[in-house]
Length: 98
Image (tube, rainbow, N blue to C red):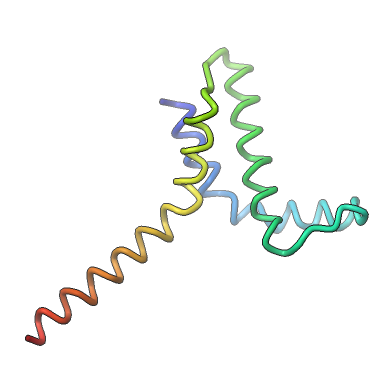
């Protein structure tokens, strides 16, 4: 469960780490041509790899499914929550008008 929570945090932090990863790749690996959208995926992969290494060093099991699921939920969870909240607000606003 701890690894899942760490994966959630890693997914949440991926957009914040992405500029640093972009600067690292662009500055040192010009031959590795990535599109702008791909840097976020690279940042997420780096953070999830750090979670797996941390779990290995601490002796905890890190099932791939929980690491990936936690990372994806952490990455897209806030956006999905905001979209659902906006849809609910629009729905309840319509009910108030009727």
